[in-house]
Length: 367
Ligand SMILES: *Cc1c(COP(=O)(O)O)cnc(C)c1O
Figure 1: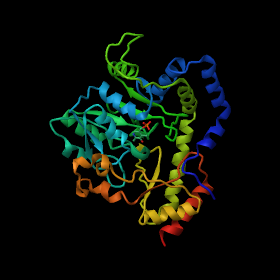
Figure 2 (figure 1 turned 135 degrees about the horizontal axis):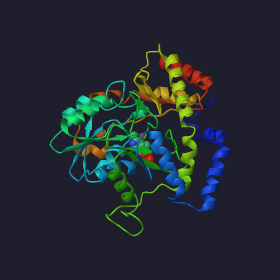
Figure 3 (figure 1 turned 90 degrees about the vertical axis):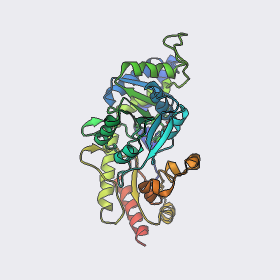
Figure 4 (figure 1 turned 60 degrees about the horizontal axis):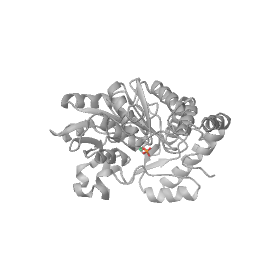
């Protein structure tokens, strides 16, 4: 049986008519960049996310950078980020001249360790970027406590967590602002690149919009220097259609994850924790195994696609070699790096496919 890692084709086919006509409408109005479709998606996305404002932009990496800038992060400021995340989280901090400072993650949860944040705070620290990695909300109560204690701002990286909640509250609404990615494989994915920022602060929202459009407030009225990072009309139309389906898709991801967890419960593999106070949205389903490379190869031979998210914790990448970090600096991240394995996860995955993945995995993992 062939099981892809994600299946964007079957999702498209399930909404083809609705999608094709939404895209066709943008083309017939030639509203290719900005315009009514973008505005209408931004409003819908703000509503979905429980925020007062949403501002679309070109991608999820720009979203982090622009949100930090709009919040007033300046060159030389230190921003604490998790050691385990996609590089965008740290890269965007550096892009504005600020300094990413890494904190370790929690064992078994994969999100930033609030106690380690406390240890990394200096007189230059201005903000924390929790990442709701794999779709699991970070421990926001503890994170907000550390932030309050040291007077730090919080910018949530929600690129993997559309629709996730922590103690009943949507992720992205805890800090001053939050960023989202609409990369095609994300839980809410465009048919190209896209991103958005949300906030409840009107002034921050206005600054975000200006930065995305060359610092303009109205045509040719450049109040600041900005850049070009705009969401295009076709992507906004695609996202607006998908927003109508995301709840049922998220529930399907959850059902798949719980079924995986049931099947893998007694195998000795470390399976994902699903805290009862959070809505995990399972962007990725990540287990920990021994002999990972061998397992990946054998699963591959059985037609099962797997992935590693991410093979090297950021502090140990060549890009951050200059910081001179040692394995003991982030022991949890270091220990899990050779064990984490992402199994196929998407809403349309069938029980039969999950059975096949689990049986194949058990067959190769115990040998
Ligand atoms: C995907 C992702 C991003 C970046 O999004 P792009 O749209 O690809 O720029 C940022 N942070 C995390 C955690 C991500 O997974």
